[in-house]
Image 1 (cartoon, rainbow, N blue to C red):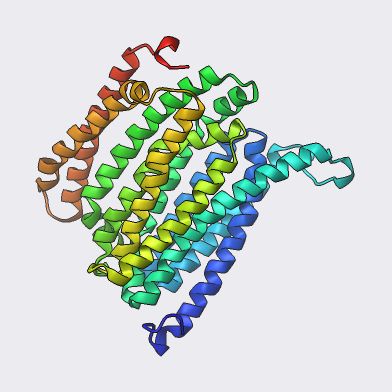
Image 2: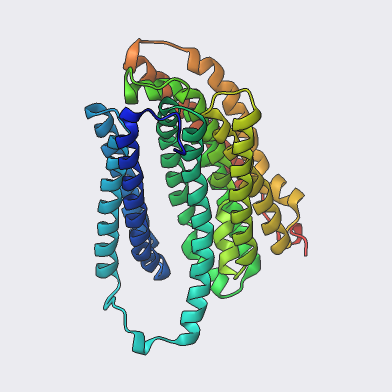
Length: 394
């Protein structure tokens, strides 16, 4: 009844998807427990390896499912299988990495347990709010739109999800050093390290986002063949814009958590979820735009407001850094390379040395090389500048 546009013949598929999503979330939460053990013991390489395998496995299963049966049930089944495999790999990896991994309630330090539960509550609230945000968007589309709108959004959201997972893994490279420095309260070194990490994250984010944004149409065409839903390309490009702020600035999250700054991050995540869902509902009700595009635009607004503006401003204030110095020393060269890359992609994307997949592969490879050179020059140039302690305000 909540989705009046779903015809009776597809109601069974809709129920199956709901059950599959619930099972997938349960497996993801179980896997996150073992992943938390690996990260808690600072086995970041092991965790990143399993997470990368999980992303590749999910991508492969999704492509296979779409080739065999291009339905949303098949796609969600692929996600369920990937989540089960990832949870199993995390369990095996945690038990083989941490000697004597077991639960002994009698030997538990209550003070340490209380602190751990505090961190767990805030982490669950943050991740749960973001999960609820992304899970609610297809529901809103189903309420206002059609099955085709839901399919367009669901398929288009897959590639940004893989991109976000890749960028999160890249940011995790800095976590061991950030964790160690946070434990020792070496704030000066934390802000310098995170600033450099932001520079690298920004280069990777802009590099991958620009390529996906410009070549969204041929990528979906190769992936889905002739089964690309109407509007999926536009939704994909909008959702890529929503990934950019987190890919650049979410590295500050671990630094703030390491210093025990929890409440502000938690309330910001919850507020972002509520406001973004409300904005999506308003756009769906009043704006004259495709149904699948409205929630995507709401995500862009909400995630840019939180990760693109509030998070770096909040972090810079907590770490007593001048925004002007931070932008000039760490961000300006990368943003300049991003602008040059965007201008360079305009003529590169129009080249057609060959037709079909071969022509796309050549254009994509040439574009990737050109962008890699531009961003490499920007990063190397920015590293030539020595960041002195006096350049950071107290």
